[in-house]
Amino acid sequence: MKEKWEGWHLHHLARRAKIFGIEKKFINALEKAGWYLTKGKNIPFSLLTALEKSLERLGNIKDFDKTCEKKKCPICKKVKVEYFSDTNKENPLELNVELYRWQKEAKKVWWANNGRGIIKVVTGAGKTIFAFSLISDLYNSTAYKDGVLKTIIVVPTSALLDQWLVSLMEKL
Picture 1: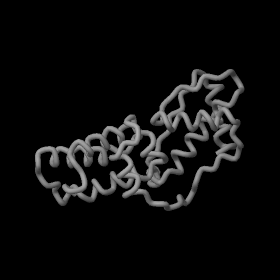
Picture 2: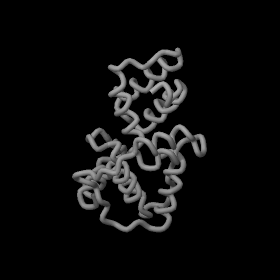
Picture 3: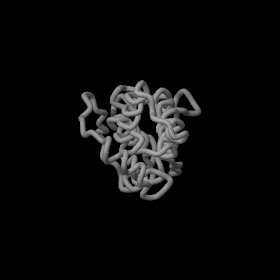
């Protein structure tokens, strides 16, 4: 593992893992392994399994290599190439609604911006459907195949919360 990665590579990947909400045990594995390499030491055998699992989780995040703040990041590209596995999820979330053109374009921009952004459109334009589409993409990513993706929906009123719940049940 020492030949494949440098300490700062793993620290960079740990920061990315935090952004995507990967489980703490995998973030810790990346950080600890990074420190061992930074100090010129070998990564302990007991840490290798968790490190491999961490890299697999990151490699299976949709567009992981394209969403790094550093354009064409060789570290993120390496993770995507070496650790991506094309396994289908048993119970995928399928959005049964066609997105509008603006939603498709906004989705591309959102992914290109490290999965970050604010959508500002008029009432009734489709923000909720857009959010469902992003939730579906994340859920269906093999990085979250173990069911560790948690989505928090924050709305200002209970009436809006009820609307979200009904829409989620119908659309996903």
